[in-house]
Length: 210
Ligand SMILES: [Zn+2]
Image 1 (tube, protein in one colour):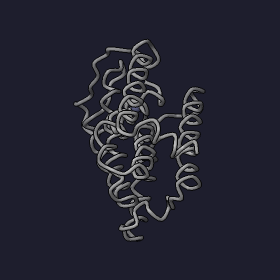
Image 2 (spheres, rainbow, N blue to C red):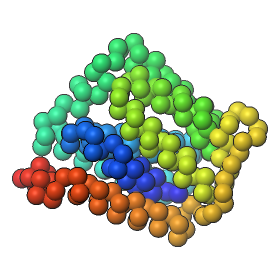
Image 3 (cartoon, rainbow, N blue to C red):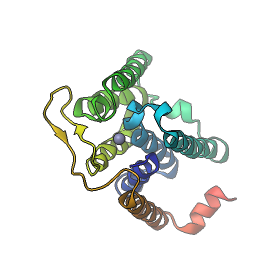
Image 4 (cartoon, helix red, strand yellow):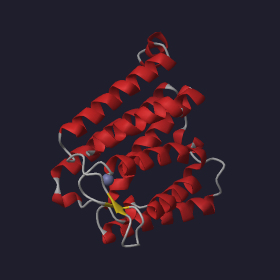
């Protein structure tokens, strides 16, 4: 699956499970974390090998920038002050080290190994929790769904890394075939449907267009 598909599935699930429980600012920030989580699993990909990885990363960068600018300038929300405000700064350093260490280990072990394993998931969410506190739930949702959606793919995922067994995939689809397109379309439609049923259009217009 492409990064865009993972992001679509993540925000769709978040719209149904998490968005209804929080205010709109927290939801926007949370969706940002969900997108980051859905991309983070593939931090073990070698960018030089595939151009589409770069275009996917640019796409995520644009969406995250828009969310950030909206929150900062339109809604006057101090993003950096609010993310993990209850978390001690020593913990944030440990969290950053866990994340950086994980990405390095993920790149050394290779694609669909450490980063796509249960232990990788645990260490990454731990790192994000130490930095961002409760927003880890959004991040973890995106990350976990990425691992689940990847199981549909034809390339095995080392879920129980570093154990040799536990490699799993259902070989239902190729990463850029019809299923990829179908999953992302359904997810985007689901997301839009749920968001517009939570906040009516008039309200969204008032917040974003005004
Ligand atoms: Zn993946």
